[in-house]
Each structure stands twice: as structure tokens, then as C-alpha cells.
Length: 530
Image (cartoon, rainbow, N blue to C red; front, side, top):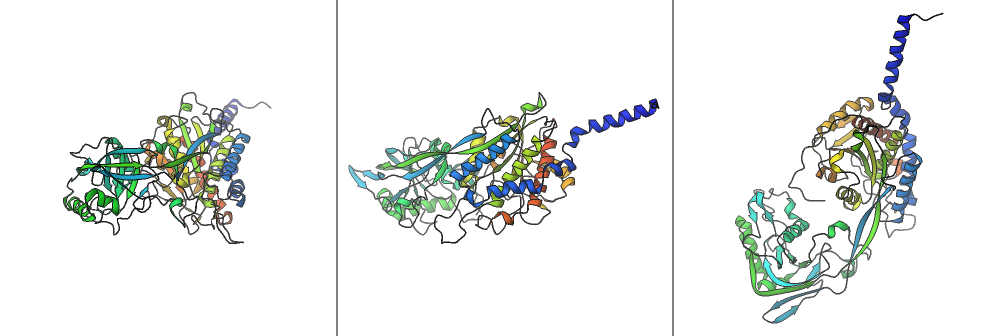
């Protein structure tokens, strides 16, 4: 029997509608449930948080094993490496205190040699260098034009060694222009070093102000070589790019103060004048020089950010990038422990959960027949627990221009607490992406907790935000197992984590298929660096 023309036209419209909807249905609730399951998520969580990973410390062989595992899965799923590699090397410096440190005060032709530990201690962020130069007292070492305050006003500090107080003026005064009792960014010693370098300073001597501190003893960094109780391997790590713009820096004690200022009371008098009305009392110490040598020995290690890439299908939009990321490191294990004691910080929720979420979402995108219009990058960061090393390194050495990165979705601790609650940190900063999540959440039905971010600088989204990349931090909240050996896989709710991963999948699917750039509210300027 021949089909009537009207019926054939109607049937064609229905078929055309169904097939036209296939692209959109890739990101539908049903497809998300099919591709993202608790079982798939659990498989990766249990591997990454197993005892064999020894807590995935940065750097460690176990972290490298975890990196290889993630890369191997990306390869097996057809997710591409970036320019031939799944790894971005992250240089990490380990510092140790050498045995040739020196500090001497030179006055009237005499040299007064000081003793390490008793009189001075080099800081861990000191450069390994020797300096002999005149001495300038520079208050707190702060230049803060927004507070009409400048310790360098009226002095020439170029090529000289400055003596500065720790902290900031009027620290315990709620009426202080320095944010009252709240710390401003200027309290950071690294901020003080940046400011000193801007003024051409050759070296820094840092002292406890006798009004703010009960002791003027030299403390500095607690180097294991200067202690009988600190473990020998408790040496500082830092991202190697922090070596830029460093000068020698030491914490000094009472004997150095006496040689430079005559007495602790003289220093206290200077501090009191600053505290009273924020007066600038900086001056060059007459006829006095200091010779200092910081013997810091640095060893460079490399950990890895793991990177997977899906090129977008649209010839124009594929120049733009959506990043889905998480940190895959944790804090390692206890070096000393009793027999039979649980000594491994498995880090199941923090952050094997976020890592498994990114892997699960990456796998789901790899299974789609039609790829997103925008390109996608899946990044697992090293060194988050040490100070956001991996994400900071990526944003200073981006594999793709940050100006063409339209969004960063960060997953950190996504598997705990009540089944239906989910925090969206950064909602205030990225309102457009938050609105997308609200709409996509109709499929996952979380109770979204949106408020001013408490953890704005607490995970890998932070440095993307500092570079004006819109972001959202998916987070299910703290708990009593946070950074404890009890953060084990059996405590994680894989059903909840899979739902979070679906919401990320739906959100990323929406972002990666539309030609829209999203708003970003600028970062607060008066915030210390991480």
C-alpha cells in the first residue's frame, strides 16, 4: 500500500526533529546517567586512594605512578595529549641550609661577627647570595598608597640593606587603616621582599617589633640542621619560579639590634612613633654597614600536571578552551608510626574524588560521537597541597592562551556530607556560569549552596581567577576526616560524587557548545598571594 503524501511529510518532520535533537541529547540527563556511573567513578577512586599510592605526596614516586595511571586512561579513551605529551613538568625546589652562613656588623673599622641561630637565622625564601652594604631602617617595609603609608618615603634604599619589622602597623587596632585587626596583604614577608626589590634593596634584616612581640629572639625558618627535634627531611619546598626577584633575607635577634640601634628600647621608640600616627621614621644608620651571606642549597625536582585534550569540532570556536580540573596529590604518609597503625593519608575525598570526577567526565566526553564545538582540556594538578603549585605553574606557563580560556571548572572534595548538598564557590565572581549550573541542576536536583566564597584561595581555581578566567569550584564541604588518615575510600559517597560529575558534564556540555563569553568580577586587590 502506498503511503499518503501528508503522512509521509509528517513522518519526515518527526524523523528530522528526532535526528536534529541527537546533538543536544548527547548532554541529556539520560545520556549523563548512562556515561557517568558510581561504579565507574568508584573504580578510579579506589585505585588513587589505595594504600599503594602512599598518600600521593608532592613530589613522590607514588604521585608519578598516579600521573601515569591518569595519562594511560586518557590514551585508552582516545583523549589526545597536548603537543604530543600528557604531562606538563612542574619544577619544584627543595631548599636546605648550608654551613657557610655569615652575618657581621661593620662599624668604625671593627667587624662584629654574629652567630647563626643565636643571633640570626636565614629565611627559606632568601636568595643564596652575599651582600655588604650600608644599612637603612625602613619601618615595616611597606608601601601602601591606598592607605597613604610609605616606609620608603624620603630614603634612598637602592643597593642597601634594610632593617624592617615583621607584621604591619597598628595590627591590634580595630581603627587602623590597615583593615583594622584583619591582616592586609602587606603583612606577608614575601610582599615586603617584592617591595624591597622594587626599591632596589640588596638585602633584608627582619626583626620582631618589641611592642608587638614579647621576644626579639631570632627565629626565621625552622631549619632541621639548626634543631635537635625537627625531622631532617622537613625542609621547605617551593615552586621554582619563586626564585625570581629574591634577595638575602634573615631574621635577627637582640644582639644584632644592640649593635645596630644601641638597644632594644631605641628600636621600641621608633616602633611607638609609627604605631601612634603611622609616621615615617625611616633613616640610614650612620657609619654602619652589614655583611651577610645566606647559604641556601637548592635541589630541583619535577612533578607533573596531567593534561588531556579534545579538539573542538567548530573551526572557529575550537580556538577557545574549556578547562575541567582537579588536583590529584595529597599529603603523603607519616614517616614515624607504630606497628599496625594507620599511617597513610589516603586522601579519598581530598582529592581522589575530584580527580576521579574529572576522569569520569573526560571519559563521558570521549564517548560522544559528535565532539563539542569548543575545545576541552582536562587537567589534573600536582602540588595543590603544597601551595597550588601545579595550577600556579600552569597559569604562568599556559599551554593555551588564558585570554582564550572561557571557563575553568574545579572539582575538589566532591564525595562527602549530605547526599543532596553542593557548594558552588565562586558564584559571586562568575554569575553567568552559576546561572548555567542552576539550569542544568534541574537534571541532578542538588540543593545548591551559593554564598560569598570562604575558600576562594583554597584550591586550583584561584590562579585562574587571578588571570580573569571565569570559574566555579564544586565542593561538598569539610568533614572530620579532612587531612586525617581516616579519609579512606569507604567514607566516600560515590553516588553523590557521580551526580556532581554529571552536573559538571552537563555544565561543560552547555559551555562548550555555545558562542558566549562569560562575565568575571575582578579579584580583590588587597589579598595576599598564596
